[in-house]
Every structure is written in structure tokens, then in C-alpha cells.
Length: 71
Image (cartoon, rainbow, N blue to C red; front, side, top):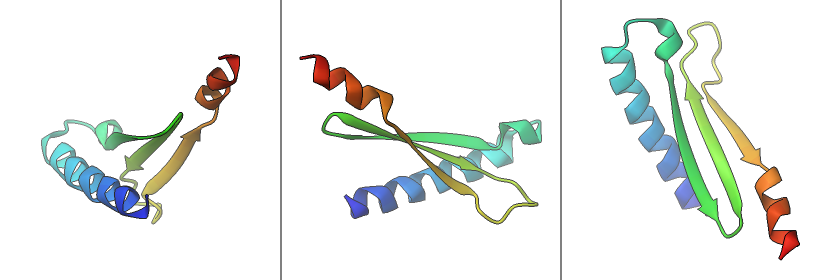
């Protein structure tokens, strides 16, 4: 799973670089990626912010795990 996280980060970085080169406004400096791990879904967001050094933010969508308990 760690290899998938690293691959996702590299892909998002390439996408973000291409987006920065073609963007018309700094509000467009964001890319998104998704990893499906069984019944959980992990959402990754990479944002370029020149004032902040942490550009890779991780969000895990917990709500979709709850849907599996209904079955």
C-alpha cells in the first residue's frame, strides 16, 4: 500500500506541474487523486502554495466505510 501512496504522490506532482504551467490563476493550483482500498476510499489533494511548505495533504473519506455495514 505504501508503494501505491508514493506512486499517487508522484502522479499528482506531475499533474500539478502541468496544471501550473497552463493555469490562468493561482486558484487552479490543485490536483486530486483517489486510491480504492477494499471498501475504504482515500482522497489525496496536492495544492501548491508558495507561502506554505506542506503541499501534499491527505484526506481519508470515512463516511464511505459506514455504507458497508448496511449489508
